[in-house]
Length: 476
Length: 112
Image: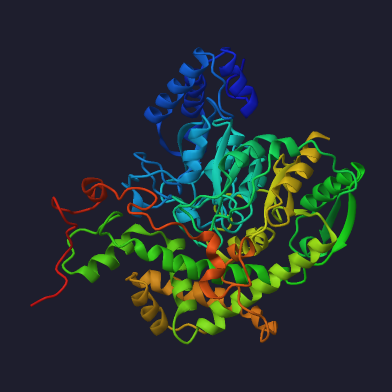
């Protein structure tokens, strides 16, 4: 049995039936990481001690003949923006190079309570700000399909690790596309749940009204199992919704025949790569073949999503990142004489270029005289973007689009042009702004063998429908 | 050019950043190019559109109630130790770049 090509269910059953052990599974993944990750760079920190303790616990359960929990013994990775008690958590930034959280992120705690073995922390763009993983303060991540290409971002490490069989599933975070776009670039499944579906407690904040935690996985079913595990109200996050959590796995096999899927021309316009267009159109034909009805819808404000996003996300980031002052934790500059000099120099040394750029833009957009023109304006356009979806969802059950306008681009290709990089998120930011769920599922390859992603967007709290459509497409 | 050198210096001060000469020049260029792009939002008439600050009020909110009572779903009992115990003193100080046994230490705040 190849221990590094398993899904959640096959890994768990192998441990349950004593065909292998949780420890052997973890060790097999650590060997694979040792062998592969030198050139990919998906992990920032390995949590071997914590993994072995958890694996031992699961193996004792299996030895005693107890039924393992749903993720019993499954090796997973966690994006380094999620706090892990006793395990260094950097957010991909120098400013948190030595930070060891005193508590666990709720999503990580729920994964471990369900038996998952956390192998380590995944590389990402600094504070999740980026679309290529080149903004990591430590090292970039390379796309396992082509080492000269980016894996996408900001959850680039989380996507690459799943694609290269270095973890069965990983947790990522999505603020403007950071789960779905790297999933698309690396050829894996990536799910962003509804805003409020998964607690953000312990997630290092980037833009609080837009941040989501979700899974990256080899199959839609694995993504459904993880969502079922991490979803649900958490009293530690007042924005987590008290909405009932359906059994996403049981819902997967319900038929898609008769379902109405929306196609919006705004997602197939200028800038969409021809090979991506063809693959996504072929995927839509296949869904039609499965009995779905394809309905034309309009999302007229789509072209305003990127400017809206970059004003709101940077404004919130400038406030959230004010906490890094070098006092209670985080990097402190040496040889400073006054408190204010300490703040400025610590932040100058600790933050990278993109983070500084976003703090500056956000501070500018919130500053006296510009608040109404930029921040408030963006919040109003956010209402219009959300209304677009509300109207469309009166007519359809889900909307299908490309995840990204292109397949994975080359390292360095966009790193000197912030605006060109921002446009990589053009099809994903809308869902973050509206708070609706979205999933990216692989739908073919370019001639150069680069993966292409199909995005399926759903109604608020209706992850079950988009998972079902994604599953039907994947299995067909 | 919307943003000037002076604006960059002022905003950096607000954000508690110092920035090198080179960084300031780059910031001037990037902020102007991004803000120029963002200006397309003014094509939209939003005079009768309410702003949207968050999405979490789309579930569980009781619109019939006034003010913060609408968000009753998000409230909890006020219990003595909260939802988790406060961090033990030593643990709270463990990540500090500089601390003594009781307090975080910082450079002098007021010169006299």
